[in-house]
Length: 486
Image 1 (tube, rainbow, N blue to C red):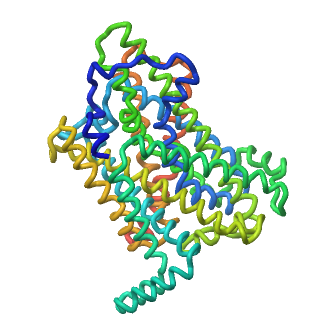
Image 2 (cartoon, rainbow, N blue to C red):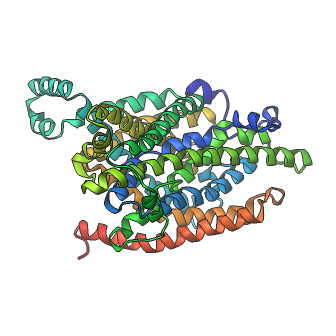
Image 3 (cartoon, rainbow, N blue to C red):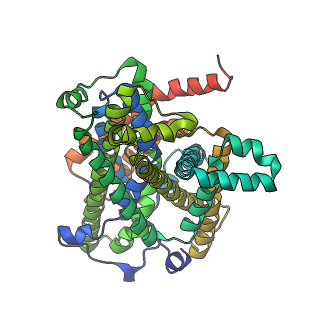
């Protein structure tokens, strides 16, 4: 990471970096990338755990909600990307300029910090989930290593016998630290593209192959998925899924950073009021929009595929993935239809999905946390080398924090839901901020079509309605669980 990031400040706009936008669709496709990284973050715990659980509990009835959730929030993502490219400002820097500031650092920046801590619990769930995957994949090796450690450290016997996946969760944490500590944008983009495309194709093929098993998806099942029903028993889970599937609050914070590191704002250059700047900005914003919609297709296919597997295979058997048996239950999505030989393939795929999201989220959080430290005045601004050092430190800190959360809570589904509540509460805030950027900050020459504006408002309205319903209920449930309120 050091060579790539120290070589230039991704938030600077030097005139020598200005480039004309690609003139053809093929050339534009070669310039996409931030959305694929975002898709890698999105297709993780929410899709593999919560979306699958929703299908397992309720069958096909929420298919329409999954599709709506994946598509509609992209309009908020695109507007945040538009402002980042035209202004050169990352998310927290832009939020720090919102009105009603009150302090030297805007309260929305501090809110992000609290939300981030909650979503790191999701990362803890992923760390534990990968640990469960590897423990199930290599039971003999796990037993051997456990016995060796107990012989050297007898006091650890109780913990390691009860939770052998902790060994693998610790290894997962260390691997994530090594990967993101030494990886800059280009390596992250390349590795994520390979994993995302592979996982998407495999999951899609698994759904298609159900037609030749005892769990086929019939036309009537799909029709039921578009009857726009919300059964009472699954309402809160459904709203939580809306908050975490598709582009969630964390991904909306991440996207402008990846756009800046890709170079979109650098290629546009600093605003000078000339027609040339306006033409460049429009061209690179179109590339960003293409990037966002290509990634939407990718993560929607993966999300829908996981949901259909849960609805078609787990729901008829009455299997609900949860607790320490989470991964083993999820594996039955493949073992049931295709046979025991697919267990290892599923475990490898599930481990890749969860680990991918873990390291990408830690990498993105490290960039935002560096901005947070600078905005609060704890570190000087405008010095690329300082930013790199801070990012590196957080690349080591966040995986350790995620592992610590798992050691304390050790329930991946619960940890994912905690992060979902935080994201659901934050979504209306970032949506409202996006509306402010769109109408009060974006250069008038770069305003979108009226149809895009209408869909943006539909997205904002949907986010507000869902948050108004789900957040109070989930906060009440959390207070009851904590014994604070009866």
